[in-house]
Image 1 (cartoon, one colour):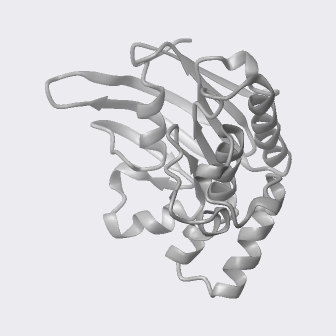
Image 2 (tube, rainbow, N blue to C red; image 1 turned 180 degrees about the vertical axis):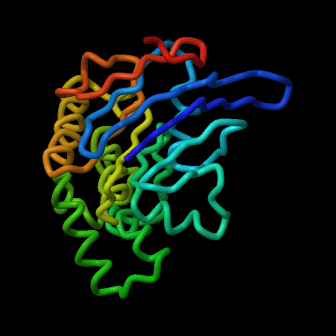
Amino acid sequence: MIVASHLTKRYPGGHEALRDLSFEIAAGDMAAICGHSGAGKTTLLKLLCAVERPTSGSLVVNGQNLPALKKRALPYLRRNLGVVFQDQKLLFDRSALDNARLPLDIIGLPSREAQRRARAALDKVGLLAREKANPIALSGGEQQRLAIARAVVNRPSLLLADEPTANLDPEAARQVLELFYAFNQVRVTIVIATHAPQTIPHPTRLLTLDHGRLNA
């Protein structure tokens, strides 16, 4: 599913956010990427979803070497990825249903099918009754569940999440983590960046970063 070999990310000015990482995450894993603030967790997630490209090394996701991938191929790669960003990136001028169906609208799925699948995704995260509400009317936990619904509406094989419980109260955090565990139970590969790996339910893979390096 994911194979990294000597992966390095260097930014202008010489700062190395990631240094010579080599690791594998198997299909169906529940993986946690942990480490201190600034360890490189978010940078690694950005490389995994091809938002950024590594400076050197190889990174194979779903059989594709991302550094060698042409720009026009990125939308097809991302159809098999779901991403929950730390700041959620919800559209606050649209309803929960419109937010959930956005990835399907982008790929041109017929409206009736997009509507059906978006409602199914909202139902999975317990928000079907709030489909007409705008995100501003939702609690923090509900907003995060909406972001998850949008991430899984495409039925991805790989789901990435950046600190998905960072700003939630304990009960909302528990509900969100239970959702990730439920998706993992149906063989969706989960990769969660977190400063608190002990909160991740039943991780099968743990990657610990320290100043951009991978601890053994």
